Length: 59
Image (cartoon, rainbow, N blue to C red):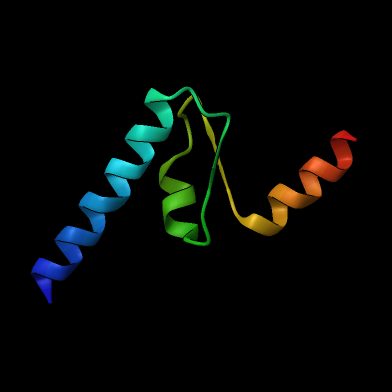
């Protein structure tokens, strides 16, 4: 179980790192804890519903 959790954390870290490296504006996820942990990065971590609402507000 601990090893599975470590792999999950590593996979999330790699996804966020790739998004940052590619200069993405958004990182879309349903994981609220991951969204909270991404605060302060150059990209905006956001859940899919909020992303859609934000895109609708921009148009």
